[in-house]
Image 1 (cartoon, rainbow, N blue to C red):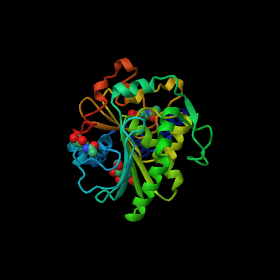
Image 2 (cartoon, helix red, strand yellow; image 1 turned 120 degrees about the vertical axis):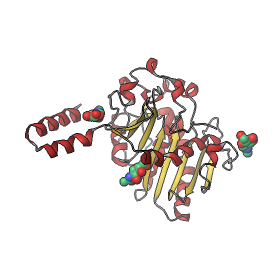
Image 3 (cartoon, rainbow, N blue to C red; image 1 turned 120 degrees about the horizontal axis):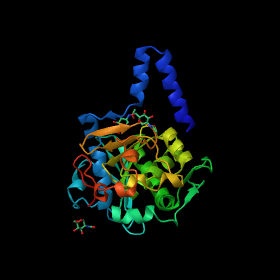
Length: 301
Ligand SMILES: *[C@@H]1O[C@H](CO)[C@@H](O)[C@H](O)[C@H]1NC(C)=O
Ligand SMILES: *[C@@H]1O[C@H](CO)[C@@H](O)[C@H](O)[C@H]1NC(C)=O
Ligand SMILES: *[C@@H]1O[C@H](CO)[C@@H](O)[C@H](O)[C@H]1NC(C)=O
């Protein structure tokens, strides 16, 4: 609230006193901007990796599981795990074209995630200080998401370190859809804390809210270039509710009904062009939008 108040003061002050050029610069920094075709296409390999999270058996990547899993043919798997039941499938590997280590966690469809998001049993809790060392106890995340992330954290970290060493890279991108996006956002924070010199980014699809205001602020400072991409009227990203203390980090890209993608500035931008404004309640959402298509890609196996 103070930040918004401060921003409006800056805008007021600038329109009164700044030169027209400076005013335009301030306005364009805050504007909701459409993404170019090239910017949208740059997400595609990550979109396939988020979808491939669904295709992974417990030992190796199952490349025979649908076209989405075969869309990044140069991918070099390093490790995978999970059982697709109690523990979501996950995999770690290296993409030579992107020159990045990739971490992906399996997602869920909307019929499975909506009950988790509205389950009162899961509450906001401080992050586990053995995984997230040095993080203030005021930083809280959804207990169910945090437990899911913790269950694979050390195996994922070991695989990421192995992949970074084998391919001489510091770039790590965590991806996922739905529940997989929530786990991968926590993984991105975890990896950036465990490996301060790594260059960690997160690209998620249909991301639910994961933590409180302090969590969103920490994510913004640690992962300033992340993207969470929301499709049309998907209701999952508006859950759990802001009224019980959940806040999205910045970095939303919203696919509008016209299929244009826009970058939404700030956390939970309530403009009608962004999800929080476009989907004011679960009743105005459409569950069918949760799986995509994200620039032609439907999530799943
Ligand atoms: C891989 O996917 C194919 C097609 O979905 C399936 O028939 C096969 O059983 C899977 N293999 C493993 C090892 O999970
Ligand atoms: C930020 O992320 C976008 C989308 O993944 C990428 O194209 C761009 O190169 C990144 N910028 C920086 C400075 O890392
Ligand atoms: C939402 O985007 C608009 C630009 O249209 C910007 O002025 C506003 O500050 C943003 N809201 C938040 C909450 O960041």
